[in-house]
Length: 280
Image 1 (cartoon, rainbow, N blue to C red):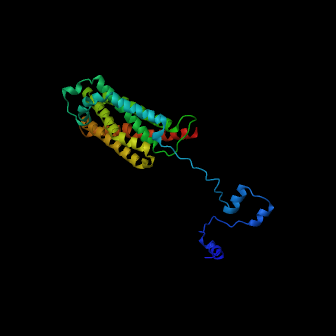
Image 2 (spheres, rainbow, N blue to C red):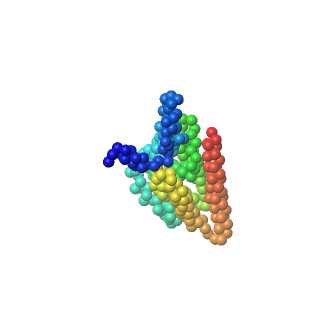
Image 3 (tube, rainbow, N blue to C red):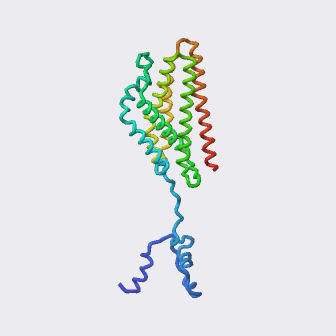
């Protein structure tokens, strides 16, 4: 093959690229070109030497240092009371479901069981705060403090305040409308329902921390688990206090006053607090 025939075939062997443009050699007569001018001439409006502007990648909530500290604290609570959990779970199902009046029902729980109950309630509140936080895609940045840590902490605090309010409300209602034994059994059923809720929410809360894309499924699961725990508690209360048809009216009033209205108010409070944090 001759050299002339080789140069005739050479253009056909160059692959076509939509960004490639033939260089106008006549422009070189005016003087040497800079690299930017040469790039713009050969690639048009795509300066490949400059690269593309990187997109900011949102961090996972589970990688936040403040949230990790909360998780470590949660596992430390579990470890500190681990040896007492066997005693606690012996009475768990009885407190949750049984309405039988037995002598041991009146006994006072030990300090170790009280510590287990406190740790379980704290873990449940943290899990609720994590799952509620996953419902909001917006993440405020409050100066040097991470928005993830602040919002999860605020939502967990709301859950704790709601729990303490329920303790006071149920204790007051039980003292007024029930005898001492029934009121104590009712309160034990409430704490047992919170323990059940904690056991159901731990895994979904940890999962959504590192998989925010699954937040919709986790929120649905969380709502379902909350309803399940509340139904167990409500059913025990109904079995304890229902005597005749007249008591059914009081039970309906209890459902509206202590179970439905507070949830609506908390839902509104969560929305308001989240909007306030976004505006700061």
